[in-house]
Image 1 (cartoon, one colour):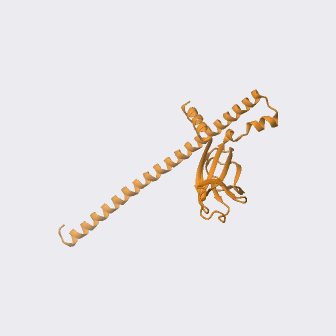
Image 2 (cartoon, rainbow, N blue to C red):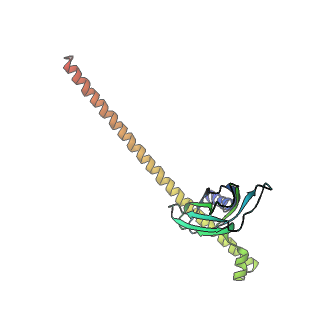
Image 3 (cartoon, one colour):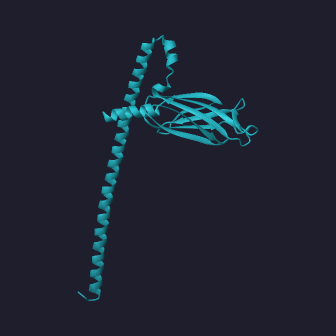
Length: 214
């Protein structure tokens, strides 16, 4: 019960968030997000640059673009594409775990060192669905649309719970592997101490015999 409540809380908190960050002309910014398998992710962004004359951020000139690169936990490339100064990218995870999303500019010709500001909104799971568009496309009533949303939420919670089980299994395997290595290291240390002690006794015995003390 507690695990289900925690999973639901994590889904509600982390499934959709927005932020903005500053980006240099040749700089790449990467974000890591833990995502269950078979989960859709939608990122929306808008790029602005600092106008030195007005000291305010304005829209970038036409032709400016952003390169988006996404890799899964095994560092396999899921997405690598150049978009415009304002756009949206979408991908679906196939492996549960930490995904890396990197954004960089596709050029450095126009800004002369000006700072870029990128507004980024990331939606995960059912939050990535445009239910207004779904309702219009499938001609769903308000009640049917609400049921669809609830089903999507239940499906996402199930995926999150399965991912938590995967994480627990990985953590258990890591703990067992660490304990096994520590145990063997203790045996090796004990064996080395015994070997050194035996060698010292042999050495002392040979020394005393050579001095005819025994």
